[in-house]
Length: 284
Image 1 (cartoon, one colour):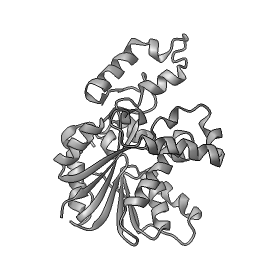
Image 2: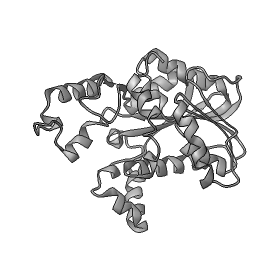
Image 3: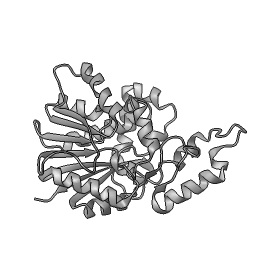
Image 4: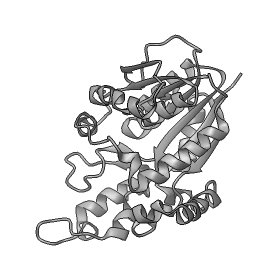
């Protein structure tokens, strides 16, 4: 745990993650990710490890489709909360749910058909430790197995703060007017290091690592994976005003998702998505 910010773990232990994918930009992330999973996962009842899967939004949904799903997360609170979703999926159950670090999962080699890493790569700030998590996923996967790896881009913070441009300090100054905030963003754009030790400059996330699409591919290759495709799963759709209202209308929701699909793999704009999803394969 030495390369995971204490603030990140404290956030999850508070239970604040619950429901994130059901409102605001989380709805885009959840919808597009599920679309990609449906198209590319092996057929049920394949074995899926959801590592760093929080309280199991993806786990329970996949279990409802007939998959054998095992949920692992570093937060005891998240694992405890996972049972709260059981009522939404009657007749379904997770094969297991337990507290575990993505870098050391207590399972044998070559036992999963697919692995989801939806959070560990941006919460693990050290390059070597991220590779350790990727190599652990590689170890767990059967030959030909799929890895689904989420990442945040270096553009996760700045565009959002341009769109809201809200007051930041008690004195009425705004984030974009704060030298410390701009220095933080400059570092993100330079090397992907989001250094926010006290949550003063940007309360949305603790210290983390942000990936460009190219850097994400490089790390996955170094971790042993091949055939990687990187998707920008939110496109520019998260910029729409009053997103929750737009989402409630089926016609406007589908129009919005069409814009995400249109620019999904365009390298020139993929960073605007904020969230990336890489789909990789373990060589035979």
